[in-house]
Amino acid sequence: MLEVKTVGVFLEEPHLAVAASAGRFAAERLAALPVAEDDGAARRQAREVLALLGEAGLCRFVVPAAHGGARERVDSLSLCVIRENLAQASPLADAVFALQGLGSMPIALAGTDEQKERWLPGVASGETMTAFAMTEPAAGSDVRAIETVARREGDDYVLDGRKWLISNAGLADVYTTFAAVDSADGRDKPIACFLVAAENPGLRFAGPQILSAPHPLGEIVFEDCRVGASARLGDEDEGFKLGMRTLDRLRATVAAAACGMASRALDEALAHAKERRQFGRALSEFQLVQQKLALMATDLAAARLLTYRAAWEAENGDRVTLCSAMAKLAATETAQRVIDQAVQILGGRGVLASHPVDHLYRAVRALRIYEGTSEIQQLVIARELLAERG
Ligand SMILES: Cc1cc2nc3c(=O)[nH]c(=O)nc-3n(C[C@H](O)[C@H](O)[C@H](O)COP(=O)(O)OP(=O)(O)OC[C@H]3O[C@@H](n4cnc5c(N)ncnc54)[C@H](O)[C@@H]3O)c2cc1C
Image (cartoon, rainbow, N blue to C red; front, side, top):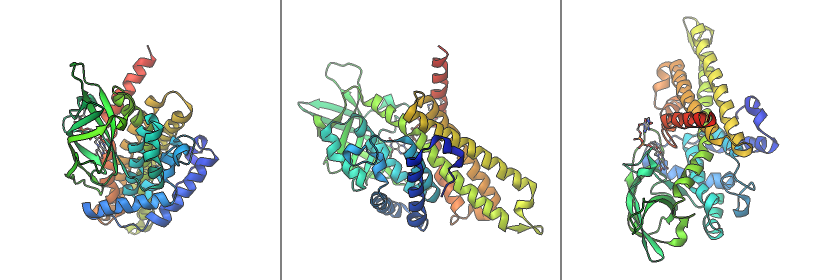
């Protein structure tokens, strides 16, 4: 279980209780989980883990209480303590939990009562798996370049296009999908958001994309995919803003996952440094190794403080965008360095595929890319700073 002292100033009793229960869940249900060896195993494990997370009541934290959730509104501090604990034990379990939040938050933020009632109770129980379908081959950081089109036909929309790098592609029950609305009058195409059920005959899983660490990723294609207007979330021109608001609110949780992975790597490095002997002494007696450990622990503590400050801002403050971008940038870059140093301390053992630090080394890399790359976070931070200074 993670120590909460460093960030305790941001946490209240309910968050500590969630942290304890997520820590117990990670120790009892995830610690023994084997690292999935191929895409098929990762996909099976993702569904199994979702069921376990649902059973343990953890998925309830991504949904508001009115629709089966744990809190009146989704609370970033709880999401952070859960993600930090899950990521420490299993990066795949963390991704499964994160995706439940990412795919469903647009529904919680902008859904009608009917849309919320249809999807959110299943998300909270872990029976309904969600996906967030934004990225396309030509639209990554530049979300406005989305080419998937939604054509209005009477009361319906017909979607055509291709999404890739989509987590849970081929597994999810519902895809929160961003598409440019093709209006007859030739206006600039606004980006709208639609809920597309997996069983829609116009939606096709086009195959997995294999990541260096187990993670169900893939492509989906929309071909004459007809949805009713009741599948649209918010107004026709609200999709972009809704997507950005969702990412803004969840960015601190990516930082928390990075901290979880880094703290596991630090634990592994500390244990190894005390036990491994070379030149007649434990590695921990060499000052070069001590320096590594000292810097890893200090950088991690700083990253955790920024992370929990950002989550606190999301609940109580008005600087969410700035603080969450700083947290994601600092924590993901820090985690990469800390894990790399852990591998170094482990020596040859650290690059054996069977070792947890090797798994962390591969798993942490994507966090600097998804939900806004490190470069995009820097642009956001600069934009916010310059705006603050008038
Ligand atoms: C494991 C994983 C899971 C993912 N899951 C999802 C998902 O569930 N749903 C989804 O929609 N997407 C998902 N993605 C996609 C992810 O959000 C994109 O990969 C990310 O937004 C970057 O887009 P891109 O890959 O097209 O890179 P690009 O945008 O092409 O960027 C390439 C490089 O150029 C840099 N760059 C781009 N623009 C600028 C600029 N203006 N200034 C300076 N540098 C710039 C970037 O920082 C990056 O270093 C996932 C990706 C990964 C790796």
